[in-house]
Length: 153
Image (tube, rainbow, N blue to C red; front, side, top):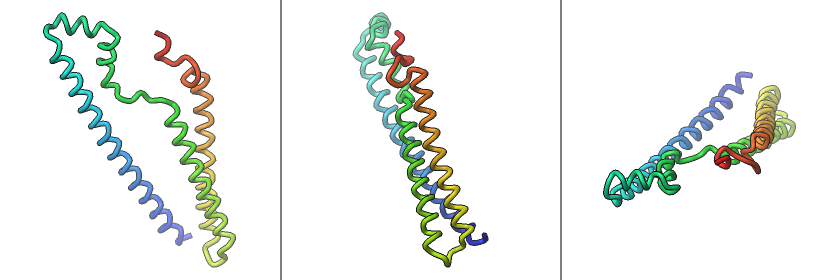
């Protein structure tokens, strides 16, 4: 069982590194998007002459969209559902792979490999079941193929 600690540490370090890279890239993308939205809003407001023009413009549909622009990404269910399915499939396949390698290589620590394989497989199945539940709930709430929060206006 002492052979499993370096494997777990390596996997955890790789996962944390991937998570940090993902957070950094998302942050950079959102910062660029916020800067572009700010520039657009400044240009539109510069074009309008007086405060009355601004109030009249903000009363229109285009003006209300301009105010809603800082809400850059509306959290849609599809992205989260698909990422859960992706993670689940990858983890399940990795778990099955570890279990197959365990049966083919008698020299390895059988208990450690079985432990890693079962944990990865269970996490993978859990992610896929989570995605199925999220899809069902999103559909019942009207977020998918129905009336969402924005369609009630």
